[in-house]
Length: 192
Image 1 (cartoon, rainbow, N blue to C red):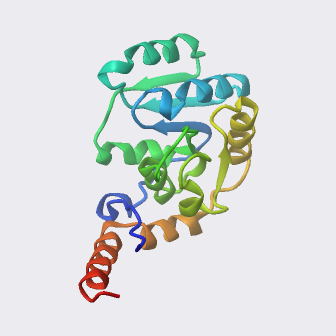
Image 2: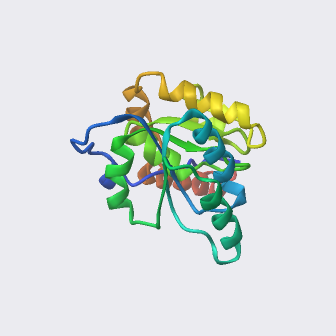
């Protein structure tokens, strides 16, 4: 085997806008359905009294989950429909934390994007997220509400680590993915 990491579009996410980061603001970008676990995130942020913006829309067969998420949301939870990556930049740049406490992620591309925009990260421990985010994120189990709440609180209360931003831009981009894919083909063709 040969590892080919996922990446982000560095043309879009390399420049930080001059937005003011808001210390109590959390964003969650992704489709709204059970696997992404927004309901537990909403419960955790409700208890913390933190502001949460959820950006995305439900797949067609998950509308009941979306309605449930809206029903349990406190007055500090805001829902915004899907938006293009160019528009996401300002939301990432204003948020202190990006939280995606999923049951499973192969990467969590929105977490990579948020990391490139200087957000602290909360990610679910299911999948291979630890291979991407190492010690630069707070990990939590999707079923553990206290763990999600603690992870969010930890990331809200620590300073932004801009060294991780540089790491993401250098290591998790589509150019590197293409280079590693080419290496894999060369290995196969050379019977290595």
